[in-house]
Length: 314
Image (cartoon, rainbow, N blue to C red):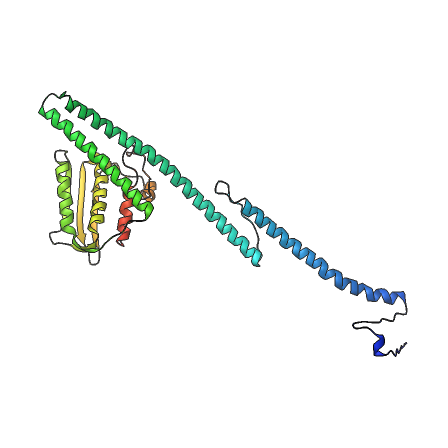
């Protein structure tokens, strides 16, 4: 063993200065090897770590740049639990929500276009009839008083139909502007329903309809917005008459259970296919069979909104 003793005054050494005494080159390499490795390993690890982070961030950034409501969603796979992994998961959720909303917007836009097309057709047909029969009456081209009354009845029916279409357009405006409000007060539902039924009895007179009216003798009261509830009931009855007319049957009932009031409107028409049941309350949606050229597909959606506004169900 060798020992080396160096005696140096403190002023001979600079601050932080270290002296190594090496007897052989082999010992020098045994010292520099671990020293060099201790510097290189953290540097290489840092390069690998930041390169990996940079690749993940660039991949996320490129995916964000490609997000478009008209293109498919680019789903990224990143199973890491760090912040970038969490951000990637948020991106995937956001992109899927955007695509879902884009599909809904596209469907809504298609329905809006269909609505305008239907409205054009639905208004043009009765208007043409009204103009034709009005011209006949004005020129006195009817044979007798009976034909005159028949022409006037058709004009009245078509005018009422156009009035209903305009009411539905107003409903659309209300729904778009979120202005549908209600004012609850106690009202006699039995009396309201009797008045509504009386109006339709006059309308259906002479049309060979079987009317099945079941309203309990005892008055039933409920906290409702009478104007909205009456509108909802009339919408349901109009639907039953318009789309169930082949059955020549109209059933209306009102009953009260322990904690609920049930209003029922029935017809015996062609009905609606089971696969269509879940969609009949969608705005602008119309079942194809038996509904061409009739309505705007807004009536039942408006009814549902009124019922839910009263914390009920349809």
